[in-house]
Length: 143
Image (cartoon, rainbow, N blue to C red):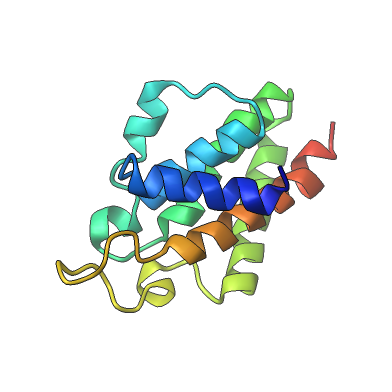
């Protein structure tokens, strides 16, 4: 399955069947894509990472990817300094490509009871594709 189809299918599933937030969804998609088993505690830690619990601060799509990268990097025996550098580069590249790291700017309508569920689904797909591409070019290529 091409990566785009994989991401679209998995985002829809995690959002509409499991009601996961963006950070948990990103973690699960990256874990599937890169064949990493995540401990439940890691997923539990991401429960409040959707814009800092709805405060609309740093986007959970960024946080989920940043949480996953060190887990993946350590499985590849990468040095802490290299992993930190990848995380910084990812955040810089994300901001350049999406114009912000902030949920309040990426999702300007905020979080209200009137919002349809999972309003960020298309953005989530794009952000996960971006994270996968980043990881394939920056991390997986650096064995």
